[in-house]
Length: 251
Image (cartoon, rainbow, N blue to C red; front, side, top):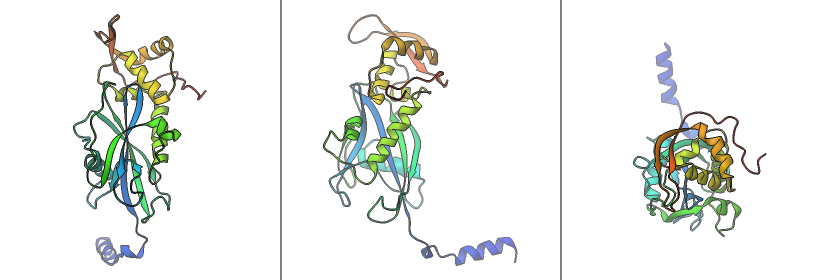
């Protein structure tokens, strides 16, 4: 028997039911900054388990879907946010596979980090759909500190915390923070993003001195809504920040 026939016979006799069933889900940590506050899109569960609790948007991966495709579909269905039309940066965060993380069955989740670009003054509206009872933007640092009085379903608080750590850490040595801003931005806008993610004030002069060489000056300026001298507009480069920025409290 040749190898092709052996492979065919093996697959025909293979019985997946002989092995424990494992389901796959995709969850999303969607970050945006407005009013100087880092926010995350959350849904309120409309069905058991954890009915009534807040959760990251997400759901089961279909039999003919990739985890990334399922993430986009679930986000659209549960919040109305469309990854295909919004200015977003998407990357895979981590895989969560603890045996007891879902009370229904063994469920493995592929979590994704999404950075949504905004002008810092407004956010796209979110609206609950499918099995979600509600959807809104919530302050990240307050959620993690427990000061909102809300708790997250499943292990989503851990996923949210690790999403924040991924973003905060990468901002030390890359210009990924610019993904939370329009294509052209001022140094003040960029510093506001850093302060929102790191949850700490930064000295304007020191920030400007360290970041200016890492950015591309467009040669254009914009007048601030509060008046004063026009501010230079920059775009992000792909250069690494060296030496890295020092995150307050991490020295």
